[in-house]
Amino acid sequence: MSIIEVKVPQLSESVSEASLLTWHKQVGQAVKEGENLIDIETDKVVLELPAIKSGVLVKIIKADGAKVGSGEVIAQIDTTAVAQAAAPVPAAAPVAAAPVAAAVSAPAASAQPAAVSPSARKLAHAHDVDAASLQGSGRGGLVTKEDVLGAVQQPAAGRAPAVAAPAGDRPEQRVPMTRIRQRIAERLLQSQQNSAILTTFNEVNMQPVIELRNKYKEAFEKKHGVKLGFSSFFVKAVVIALQKFPIVNASVDGNDIIYHGFFDIGMAIGSERGLVVPILRDADKMSIAEIEKSIAEYAARAKVGKITMEELTGGTFSITNGGVFGSMLSTPIINPPQSAILGIHATKDRPVAENGQIVIRPMNYLALSYDHRIIDGREAVQFLVTIKEVLEEFPARVLLDL
Image (cartoon, rainbow, N blue to C red; front, top):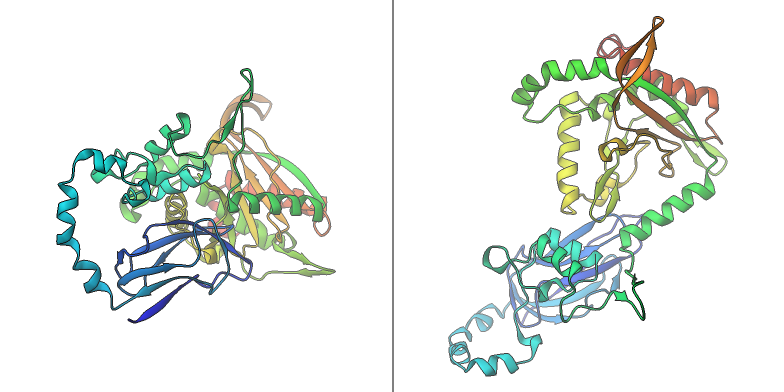
């Protein structure tokens, strides 16, 4: 017998503990090196914990839902038990030949848990659904996201009841917050309580950017393998404005102001588990294509919870785009310890005055929320005006560094 310990990986400094979601292996089952044993949820991401050696899972020390810390032992694997685990397979034949009634009367715990897709597993966790007990509609019986949605709408037997309706037609549903939702709530309250938040607004004529994008989007995608969106234009404009007004890129530490000599831009991305803000490191050194590729990759990985804690840590300024959901105007909340955040909204055709004439232009309302403790209104307004000017005169201001 050769026992190795399964330990929680090292969490980032800002993460004190994590929660175990669902074990994908049961005691006595064989595991392969690199095979995912369990998902671990922090307040930022969901991590997969793969087996470091092949063998048999001989002990689970921490069950589903347990709170754990970095380096904590949660299970044991016997690396010499592979042959023993594989040997009894032929003896299982008589069981398959037993009467159907016997199979029905067997304890439910003896059944093999259903395979669950990552997106279905995360959705099930958010709605307190036992995904392993569902009948999978995917290939090979895989439980899909649609299966979980069906269970949420029509609760299945064996699922912990989430709806309480003691009388009448006024049901209520109580669902525990996920760790990431708890963390979002904590940080938003922290931002509101510890910052003097003020928001200033402006509008930008997006026609120059739209025309530029329409003219080159096909050639851009053909060369770079990624679609040309609008986010990269905003990132470029933000970097130019931050370079002009470094206080907006700064943060507060006690009675000190920390001026950052780099530009790490957080891009807010919505996912099933909540809002995540991965970081574009050194955005000032990135090309339009590099920005678009990074954002597309982050968006794809956010859907399946594959963004790492390191990619969510840090950031000197953030951008949030409520326009993708149809928002016309909002007041975004600062992501501490940052001192400002830019809110982008839906671009809509609106009547505007140009040279004494009323014309229709694709307009976008911009909102800058900032910490008034260190950023004055004058700087905030000029910062937003700079973003407006860059976007309305793109790419001239970018190429000429104006």
